[in-house]
Amino acid sequence: MQNISKINCKIWSRLGQRGTFFGVALPEIAAENALVWVLTADLADLSGLARFQNAFPERFVNVGIAEQNMLGIAAGLAKEGNTVFATTYATFIAMRSFEQIRHNLGYQQVNVKVVGSAAGMVMGMSGNTHYAFEDLAIMRAIPGMTVVSPADATEAYKLAWAAAADPRPMYIRLTGGLNCASVYDSEYEFVIGKAVTMREGKDLAIIASGTMVREAIMAAEILETRGVSAEVINMHTIKPIDAETIIRVASEKKLIVTVEEHNTLGGLGSAVAEVKSTVSSEAAQLFIGVPDTFTKAATYEYLLERFGLKAEMIAEKILMKIESL
Picture 1 (cartoon, helix red, strand yellow):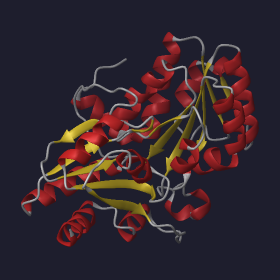
Picture 2 (cartoon, one colour):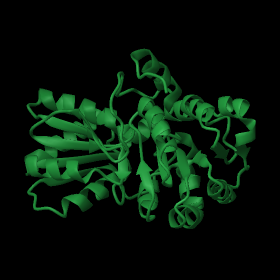
Picture 3 (cartoon, helix red, strand yellow):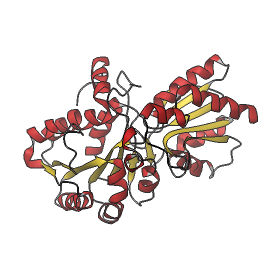
Picture 4 (tube, one colour):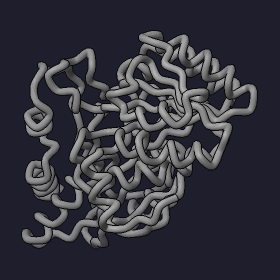
């Protein structure tokens, strides 16, 4: 594993979460572990898998546009003692292959990491067929599935190593595209199931996942200029979620804000609310994400702005919520 340095973080941010996960981390992991396999549904080049394919052709399988078959093959390889990463666009692997993931991975608890790339709305002009803002809700409903969404390319790198060492079936949600902005530029502790506090604050807590972590940090900086102190938490693991951290902020803060590039139903916000409902708390919760609707094909930046997922818009929504309390 490489050191987490400023130069590495800068390089990885240009590659994005997908390029770093598949093009940097997995070849390194496979060089140390002869049981690591990668399967793709005709998305080798677009996933940055050329380096892995060239170095380990005997452990690389392109099944073609056959996502459901890919999960069956992956489960069979895992049953033989291998650690298998199976990948394609999040919309296809999470939805078209749901039954196979449920039965072959969740039910049988096999060591397959389902990697959904280009999650959220980063596919832009490809439209609703290629958007994935239901995948967290779908995957976390499967018993025994771990669900993780890294904040940036550096965390995607760390997650790849952690996933390879974890025997549980897992859904890994990669968001953003190339030139994915960094939130980390130095070493830190990454543990599946343990949130990371990015910024301290006393008035409210913003809990975010994926590329929304950076927007949350910038929103907190804007709020600071308006006299509002916001803690920012990177909840990279949606399942098993860090209940201890949620319970802490629910007891300390007057408001919890969840920010996600996902439907506001069933994703991070719902997972936080489920934990919050188990304790006595007066903290209100504001759900910021994609509303329960389909949208039109458009650029990624336009879609983020349309749904209020840019830092300035997040800050304004929070200020409006504070005024209503």
